[in-house]
Each structure stands twice: as structure tokens, then as C-alpha cells.
Image (tube, rainbow, N blue to C red; front, side, top):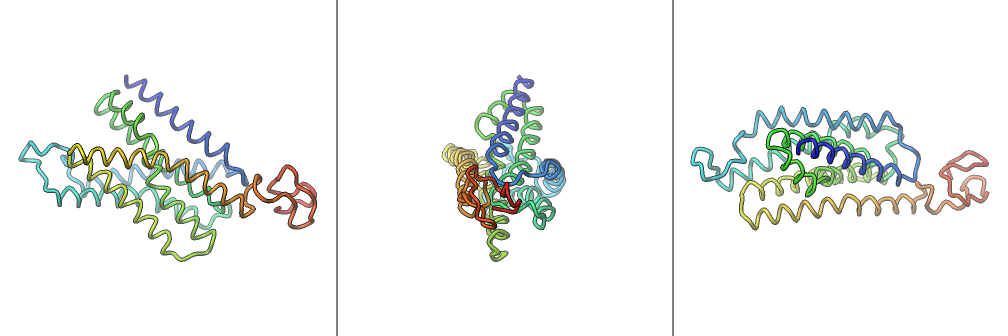
Amino acid sequence: MILLALIAFAVVVYLFILFIIKRDRGHKEPPSALWAAFGFGILSIILALIFNGIFIPEDIVETSENAEVAYSVGALFFYSICIGVIEESAKALPLALFLYKKRYFDELTDGIIYFGIAALTFGIIEDIFYTLQYGGGTGIMRIAISPYLHVGFTILFGLSLIYKKYFNKSWWIPVAGILAAIIAHALYNFFLFTQNIFAVLAALAITVSLNIAVFVLFRKVQKLDEGNGKSATGINKFCRSCGRPNPKRFLYCPYCGRHT
């Protein structure tokens, strides 16, 4: 069962990478940058393990039936916020510092591509830990219900960051993005920690919504890239520099070589 879970993890990663790379109609992302996003995903899980180990009780997920590990609703909410802050900061901030001024970080879809890869790496490694600890059944359940949950959290920041750079907006935009990611993550954990059937259903609703939102948002920002001439399938039917036809809508003009 554990082997089956590990195979499922590999399939989920492959499908996500295939989806975003095949549908990236702008300039091709540097392979080194994509691998860097993967590396930052590994770094993020290391940072999260360290800081969760320092600030989060190991028995936080234990049931309240054991008086020795019982936590009040307020304590559960506090620790849920702490986990959200630690994990979303670990996934988002180091990668943001690396990416923001890079020339190739210039399309709205990049906010999903790079931060999605890092978050998926984080999520898959976390799922592997749970699988090795609790068995293959747990791994299969997690991959079936929430394969892209961490991606859904983290792209809230990734999209806000590229939106700020793309349109030269205020830094309050990415601040709002990281806060949205933290709150969504905290609510998800809080609902699970309370172990109430209605709370668990709320956590499931968050999970399903974010898994769907990853692909809906990608398509929406892809259309925005097209509308702004940042995609080879968008409005660039003619070169804006030399005026010649560009029937195949290449991102760079085959005649003058300039951006269309």
C-alpha cells in the first residue's frame, strides 16, 4: 500500500508539471529556475519542520479524550495560526526573495508556476512523511482528497506578488496575499483539530475549493497574459515593431526578432 501511495504522489507531481508547462504560452521558463523552485520547496519543508518543532506541541492533533493533551478552542486556534504563519512563510518568502527581480518572472502565470512547484514539493514531502508514519492508506486518502492543497494556499501569495510586479502596484498587495494564504491554512488546520463533524466538512470544503481554484486561476491569469500580449496565443496577431503579420502568434517576431 505504501508503494502504491508513493506511485500516486509521483503521478500527481507529473500531472501538475505537465499541465503548467504545456499551457505556458509565453517565453519558456529556464529549467534552472524550475529546479530552483523545486529546491525551495525542499528548503521550505526543512524550515517548517524546524520551526513547527520549536513552537507547535507534538500532541496538538491528539483527541481531547485524553485530559493530558486536551487543548481549548482558543489554544487550537492559536496553534493553527502559528502553523499557517510558519508553513506559508517558509514556502513563500525565500522563493520570493530569489524570484522577484529575475527577468523571467514577468508573466501572471509565473505566480502559479514557480510557487506552485515549490508548494507541491512541500505538500508531497509532507504526504510522504504521513504515509511512512501512518501507512499507505493515509497516503492514498491524502493524495485522493487534497493533492494540490498546499499549492492552493501558496499561489494566493504567488499571484499577488507577480501582480504587484506586473502592474507596479503597492506592496500591500503581496502582504494581503500572504495573509490570505495564512488565514486559509489556519482555518483548514483549526477545523481539522477541533474534530467536529461539521468542522471537518468545512475543512473538506476548503480542500476541494482550493484544488479546483489552482486550475481555474491558472486559466484566468493565462487569459490576462494573452490580453496583455505576454502570450504567444493572445492578441499579438501582428508585430508591434515592424507591423508584419504573425499568424502563428509567436511571442517574438520571426522577421525582426523583437517582442510582438
